[in-house]
Image (tube, rainbow, N blue to C red; front, side, top):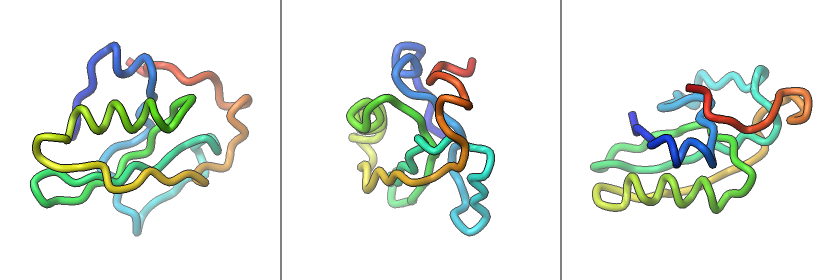
Length: 93
């Protein structure tokens, strides 16, 4: 599981990490969630992340995995709750 600094978490909000796509249930997520697919040491992982821009997501993940892997894809279209009803993007810690 990737660990992010407080500064990085100021720009992104991690909803869930290391998701099993076959058991994905996005009914409780806001519709501005992005699914980040990345590899580390040959293993593929999927995280659900909110951010104001995809660039913020890419920057945070690229900085974490660039030495052992890469960001494969950032996909949108997940979640079912309107973002304004879910709340602002914030650090959950």
